[in-house]
Length: 588
Image (cartoon, rainbow, N blue to C red; front, side, top):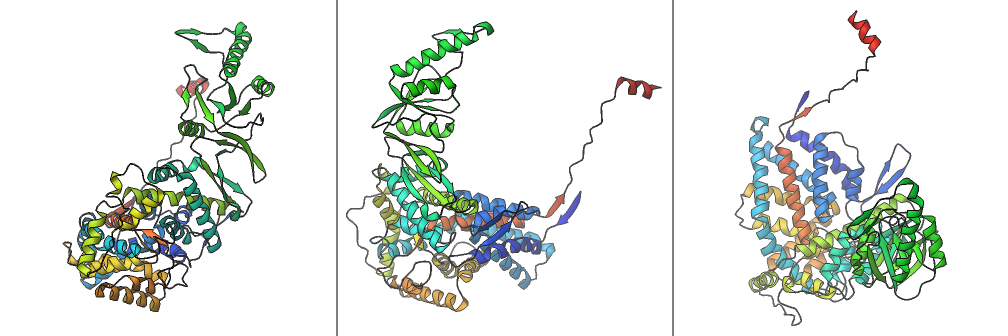
């Protein structure tokens, strides 16, 4: 067993290596990373989580950092690259603090206490700063600008999310397709429930096609099953479908409480009788479509052709369960005739040279078809699409309840008039049904979104540096300085200073937040503009807050490591069994 001492410099070195990898990939102007595998496969990506997962890291501290990043990405699906940048900036700030105050390795407990104070601040004070400082500003900004009238908040959120993960052309296409997919699924339904549904079942609601341009991606009405019909017949209108999870030719049958077991000599006659009875039941139930998770006997497909019944075999069980859930299936008493449901339509679709089945349900389900010229680009598009609905799910779950009190208090303090919306209801949590427009209006009112490009970091830095928080000044200053690492990476030094100066002047003067739009260049790829009639890409305030908390939790874990013990698993050598002759020779 070998022991390795852990110091602040070692932690900074480990995180610094990860920082060098992701720094150049941040923002819409960021580049991509090219990976080569032993098999010769090449991966080109700028998706932060995919970059970190592709790295083969041996140092245990690096793997621990990646575990923290993965846990955060599992909640918000956002901020992976900012996580690494902010963690490195905090470690550098603590290192400078230790150097100024001459805190050596023997006083490591003081640095651990400092990290603990930062974590305590994030749990106790940060939420108050976000609620009473950031959210009122965000609410006023969004209520006064075009993100409410000209573009849906969804479009701007999706645009801000995909812009930093895909190229410009690919991002525009994927944004359009994802927004179309959401609007079709949520049409006439509760918006929050639709987002939850898409988040939970995304793996079953999309299919991939390799070899085509990403511009070929589309939304298809119905649930696409990546299997072709074993028996296909043209069906019009609504039809009855039977969902089964085992073979119809099973010789084991149940009638009431009696179970009949076939002996070997009666096997084939029993199978024939069971199968004949079950196929007759299908005709009696007027079943026109048979959906099976297993391969059925050949006699079943022959029977289906004669009776004009469509058969789809080897369908994923989870997809069949989802289909039954969406169609409110009737459960039959005798297996394997298990679920009977109504389908609005059955058809064949051609995707990438393959023929697949498409099933229409009463809920008008849609399938997202994602295309890509190579498996790497296709996998990246799938990761980004899944992350969009994880982000939306997190935004809906953490929407503030006291959405009007904060904005009105801020307006009174700054002498700003806020116009009430007579069509707005009292509270989003009290509504049993929210349309898409109602949901995004409430998100705006709640101050749940801000312009991308460092706005959150600038604001939180200002409030931590100038407000009298109950937390200690050392921890607040360290966190405030580390927050600026993100906009410093995004912009040049001169542009960074201009942005910060204009934003701080607007806050001090208490004027309308029009100035914050002027700060952000219309020519930037973030989509921000000089005019209040132009749309801006947005990001979630709650996701940004969660990012800060996750980084401070990881920092606390890093600084509490005192040593690394490198152990080797003992090698067990299997002793060959001795024969009786060998035993006799040994005894002699």
